[in-house]
Image (cartoon, rainbow, N blue to C red):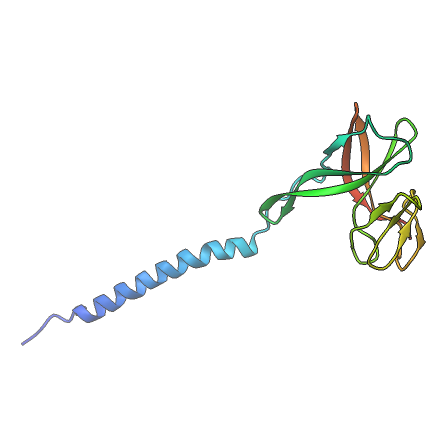
Length: 164
């Protein structure tokens, strides 16, 4: 008896299972590979200006802490975060805005009104109103935001490192 030797039922089912396995593996691997290997679209290299607040009520040479929100891009994720800046009005049109972290270990510092200086309570670094180190282990002056004034609104840009 000459039987036709085609695929039997068992090998057909095994082939279907392997094919489904390959489709599922591809469906899971392709998005992961794209996520890991393709870089996100980069934003323009222009700095983004953020409105920090109104400076019309600022007194000259008296620091004030401004609280504002900014968007931060982390890979594909954009998060809105609350941050602060210490703002000092110097004259009629010149404003300086310092970042809120000490340059020693990144601790938050505050303004000591009695001594007219910024004080980091963690390691007792002190900074003058110009941001320069007065005492303590801080290795450089306070970092500052680029600033521009639009009417009575303070606009903050990129951060510049403080001088050593």
